[in-house]
Image 1 (tube, one colour):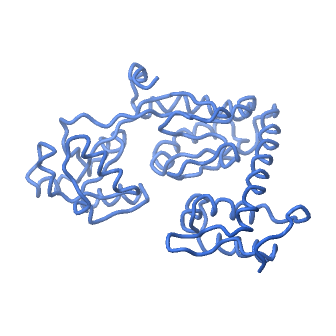
Image 2: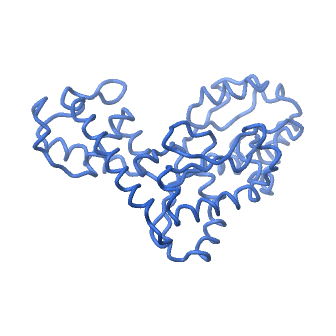
Image 3: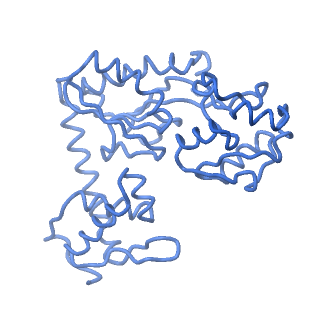
Length: 312
């Protein structure tokens, strides 16, 4: 394959181009596959097909993943511009829609998608049965500018000027384990009692350890013999007594198979934001779903409106 060519006279499949762009931005096929919610072999075939279609090599394999070739560096800017332009056209069309019926995509974390969204979506089906709903369950922040979703539920204020956000609730998280697990430990009472305890890790393990240690714990990687990137798997591992997990209080406090590890410790508090692109706010469909989420999420989380002042 060649290393460079004139892109001006080239047309190609957008799905393949998008696969290439996300792979370039994520730095590996595995990370890109997670971001796009597809199987890694499928993503790899799309990237390979694009290389064959264009007759160039776009990536070189390096020890840390993939590195763009000269041709890849040239192409990525063109594809990124195409994606942004396509997103603007799509959002402009959606924003001018006066009808409620149609498709809407909501992205949220795996935990929120599995436990928070279903009762709200049941209401939405009753209110607007003509809306087709796609839930993008991912702990990766999706790009609303590229229409990877219409509405996002996030735990941080949006910073991009094209996006609008509404602070709707406070969520809380704590450490949980099975009663039997805690009994075997002798019912720990302080963070110091957990120094030798088994924990279940999540992605960005070092960041998780630093965060817990900042809260008064003394943990290291040896405390995390089991680790997973999937939060639902993490939660089920805790429910089966494999170690101490961390999860939302609205879920853990209602689970008869789990108990707070240190019930006298203050839970971790964090905000819940609804985010959408500004242009989509002129869509009746998006407005209806956005407002329903804003109304129902606080009650499902048991959020105190006064607590939002701390995040404003």
